[in-house]
Image (cartoon, rainbow, N blue to C red; front, side, top):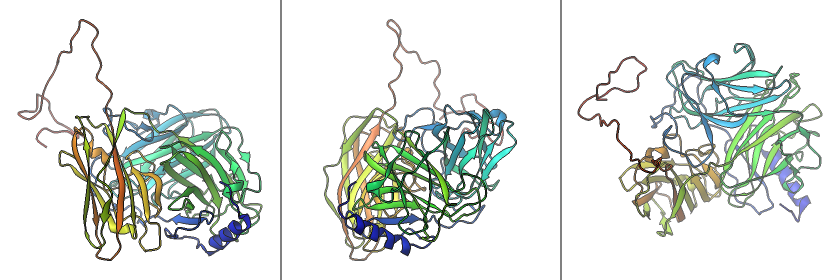
Length: 525
């Protein structure tokens, strides 16, 4: 991205960064000129360790396992039993994302992978989509014996506030290693969680100055692994790295703030850019820990193909110097292919508000495609985004929420939404920026609750302005993407399918018996 007024950009960035507090709370920066960069730092909601925060969602996971193929981030699905190193799920690679559930209470999930001596492990949990509302994960990296802890983390993550992040842990020898995830409390659950893993080999590529702006960003190497130093300690010292991503790709950024493991560390922050109304917003996380080995983890699914940026600096201009070293790992996970069709509404535009009221718009889906996965894309503008709540109704009358009270909470902030909501996205709504992103619904909702339905008929998007103020907006467009399951197998010539067993379990239990406290099925319940 070229800039005509470079000195003006540097001056604006210096002013903005120097004004940012160490723990900003989702700052709502007004749309600026295309060359005026704004930083929004996400601080997750406060949470008390070990407490369940409540939530509406009651189903584990984010999709119907085993039957349906999601359209979105490709996950390795955790399977039980995997409560020990001996029963660990063997991972098919070392650059992937895992979808798991800490369920029932006291569950521990183990995953195994192979690595070589000197490899660096980057792993982090994303727990802010957990239906319980509690995000309190613990993450351990075990040596090949399955008992020696190489590194442990509890709260260095940001999605949610008590999630876990390990960045740059060194493997001592060739062999098999283990990651284990559990909830801090033996009486709480994570339903679901994401676990991202990237193992880096060799050495990171050193940054090259100047790289203090998007225009001078260092291109990321193919490994996505770079090293740098925040030196000198001045407001304009920012490190930018550019990379390309396709529509629907998920980016995992992991920042190691003590790569030497010498307990000399610093409070860095990590961002991805550029997004927002004017495509000028840097979305940043900044966990406050300065206890080595501290790290930052950020996840984002991008809506559009293009050039994006990884961003490293500190909220404090005085933080830095020759010992403020870091290693940054950036992984890009492609969107899963699928048998998908997008249906776009012609029932737009629709006025939203002003004042409290309901706005509805429809889409008619022809035929009877069966839903294996469903995504919803919404384009709207609103003077006060937080006023708007969204529900989606299927032709069968299945009425599920998408979001309530997200985005800017004061006028003058971000006013545009261009979001695809997808259960397989990287994170739920977290920033006030809502343009150019693919997001999960809020943690109380699941689009997978539509899975298995026949999609033919009229779909309705309901937008409720829940405030009596004079702010309004316009729904300018929306669509649904329906992915169908793979076709059933076809019999060879001369053969026909035969039903070998049938039971609807309505009249009886079909001869099956129920036993055990961990049995999730019992006829009549």
